[in-house]
Image (cartoon, rainbow, N blue to C red; front, side, top):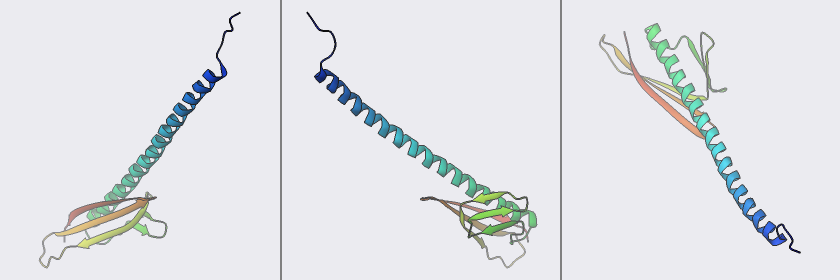
Length: 132
């Protein structure tokens, strides 16, 4: 009489192959998940830094001065808030450098905004003209 089915050795080999495949798939899934979180963090950081840059340039242009009046930077909480309550997170440094102009012409102002989230840093830089 002929027995049907698999032997114990065949089942062990199949189980070993399935286990190796499962470990490989788990590692690939885990790597993809970490990269997705890192990518989302980078997008969020860039968005906040660029939004902060826009808030600062709008404030400087609307007030026709070289002083920030409508935005508040809180270095302890790493936030920048405007007068409408819009908040930019992860801002670690804002640097506004005024150009030297002794005549009555427009003055160039350089703005540098640095942001950091986890181990990722991002810097955004722009220059604008301010009417005297």
